Length: 447
Image (cartoon, rainbow, N blue to C red; front, top):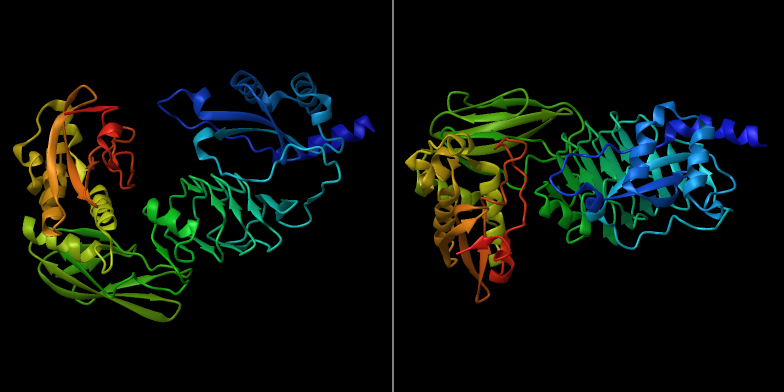
């Protein structure tokens, strides 16, 4: 019996999900929890040292060796009698998923269905093992567990049924070709980093006001309430000369062919990169699956005032609240303005980077340039706004105050557009310094 057990474990060790710790600036032990896992479901928390020790010698360990280590750490009654798999996990502590089912238990009658591409246990999708491009999660699943779609290179589209009520953080993790996730229903809980480092992601589909829809909005992921193929929410967009824009045919699974009605005004590459060359109006056509989709692009000369109007036409929608308008402008600046990092490092920041023109026309600025540009757009929207100067992180700094529902709140667009790994190419909005009270800002800002 013992020999048979070891044989089964040895065959299943390849299923172990071992997370490589990402680089971070904080204390790793505080940021992560570490677990030994049994049968991919039960887990027992261990120390960072125990985790690192096992991970460091994982390739050399035999099934007997892993089981022996487990027995030295875990009480015997916590190890399932029908043991088929042992693994280790590192779970970010800041990505809790709320009221997920408890995976540490005494129910030895639990069974795991491994007869298909889906590893499912008690309604929990533990892992997708298949190689399909379009994946329909079975409607018996109620929970999509962390790492269920872990670095799967085949998956391009995942359809999540109404039955799913819990979606863990890192459920979709480093899937290089994942373009679309369609949520048919509304989950009770979604993880803070439900979709993480999936660099090909184009858009989500989710019910309006669902947690999935709000997740997409918060993380600046395009989201639609239907899977209808479209070039965007509007059939017309506004840009300025010299602008470069990446266009997408949302929800399209087939290849796309792009064409401009007047390449001298605006050209478009085979990958959908639009370059605005001079003033005028062009029609951009995207052909996919035998159908043609059109977008009208209106291009004007580049100036501060025209940029302000262009931003408002592009991101402000009828019926938006004051907070939503502020957030839309905040996000546009993060996606379209770069911090003048190299000049800052060398002490050669030009005067224009300290101005609204630097941010709005050149697309490059430092903190006061960000702040002046933000203030200029707020003025056009008739939202009370000031620039405030002071200190943060040991140096001079500038940011904004905006008035929302009678209260002055802080917005630091510069700090919400961080330098990541020495690069100023970040396009992902953060909200660490968005609409904060003075008490919250005083933790690391002085004015």
